[in-house]
Image 1 (tube, rainbow, N blue to C red):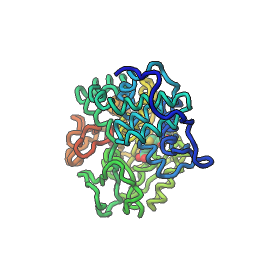
Image 2 (image 1 turned 135 degrees about the horizontal axis):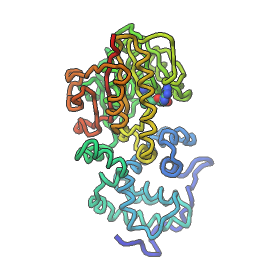
Image 3 (image 1 turned 180 degrees about the vertical axis):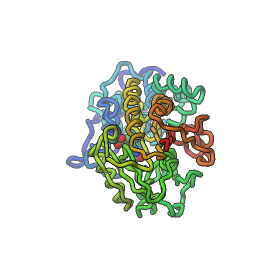
Image 4 (image 1 turned 135 degrees about the vertical axis):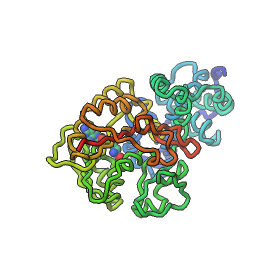
Length: 436
Ligand SMILES: C[S@@+](CC[C@H](N)C(=O)[O-])C[C@H]1O[C@@H](n2cnc3c(N)ncnc32)[C@H](O)[C@@H]1O
């Protein structure tokens, strides 16, 4: 592809983010998508924070803007490689973001070319309207062929993650990267006794799965408070802890409460420990919606001393979250290599604190939603220094997911497992018992 000529065809009168009514941009979906992409890539804010910060956009605009922004973030390397030969010099960040949005709509989201081009021209200041129009017309005409020639899996994965995953998983790094390019399905955990929801694929581990893009609020089991959103892999740690009715369970690092809900729904007496006040609010809301009870404690789990022992402890430790990239495509753009050792350094003290909370004979499950072995296998190996005994997970406990079982009896899920059914988040799970 060659750079655009100096006098590109197209609208000459585009104005920046034209408005049809006071306070409302002419194209609210694209304006919101631009705000989301800029927040992540320029200001390094999470997509979730950026969505919360959107000015009173309507729910429909938010969902559509999220879909566009997620496509840009998922395929950023490929999109930039398609744009690269079409740009003579680096445009201002806002213009580049508009071009990325236009390219994602044209190449990945099947937006009709005239709508994609015109709406992205609308997003940029007048002096850049011609450039955006010309470049996106070229993308519409030639971009699909250019995209096909690229090694997208590699381009869409930051080099440090590719290297780390290749070292840990060998050639499967490519399948992992491929899984990250697809929107994740909607997974729901169901309260025990809830009938399989209509239209759901019931996974062998009990999760109800719906196609990507399904609106959760339209699922009766969710609307009636019998179900909550939780990736099929995220549902495994509480399942493998297996709390008995009436048993005392500490759920450390608990918000937003997916695992607290599972444990409470099993009938356990749960104490949910969470440090972050804002996230405690979400935990409370989620439990209230589900009409499930747990004692909620705001504390640093590494220093929390309740003065009583627990039958079981679930530690879902803070981590780099590289296992959740399918659901959080901002993660590769926000995390840096140094985050992994910093977060791993928090996990050892949390495991030691969790071990102290157990009664003799009590059970601990340690989990992280990370694909980095420093935050998984290395922590499990080090955990034995706390006097814990291994309690290996058995193949029968992981129906259909036996491939995730390691020789040590730990669980290592990856996004490329269950690929035909829509994949899984990457989790590490290890189970221990305190000698008793
Ligand atoms: C991976 S998320 C937990 C997800 C949660 N278990 C669930 O299933 O919904 C980690 C949580 O740990 C909290 N956290 C981080 N460090 C903590 C600490 N030292 N003590 C308590 N909570 C902590 C974070 O605020 C975050 O809410």
